Length: 226
Image (cartoon, one colour):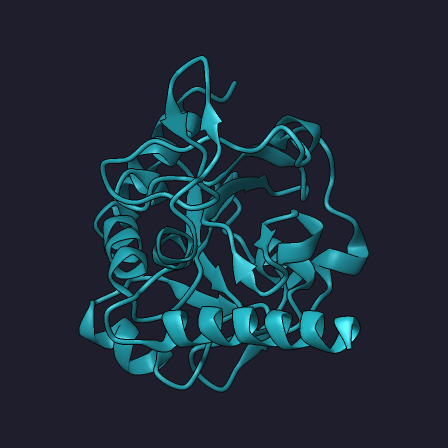
């Protein structure tokens, strides 16, 4: 009986999360967090809430329990991840390995920003900011790509409507997302950005980023690279 009650409560919690994510008034996993709990952990030194996702205008911290992004910087992404098949908003497929191999000779690498879902307000803001800064990234020698594991059906119309000037990639098996440990509660993506060199080496990587400031932050990171 106790086991049955626990299973029922677990199912109810999962159902509530799914309902929140799909409802019209809740657009991001961050909204889900706010609804599910009012007693989030605090960084006692800075007295700010630790959130796995960022809202515009709010700071966030990465939990000390997760792998540090610095553990990845300087490492080369393994072939098993590079060769993972990725869908695009069209009917084509590609992979990180194919993308890196086709870069123009004078390019240094790619910028990949990971976002929870196509069509939501914060994700749209992040995507549009990268589109507006697209030329700046190209001038610095980097191609921009968005990556998500969410629904693909509306991606094409969403991309056209927001005049996105780069390709959206769909990590349908979440292999890249899991390799980078950018998951939260197993099925949500922690908003992140990563700079990858032509040789598949990770040059910069941050998780739990602010949707509104992500593109400008990556530009600063690239300018700081040697």
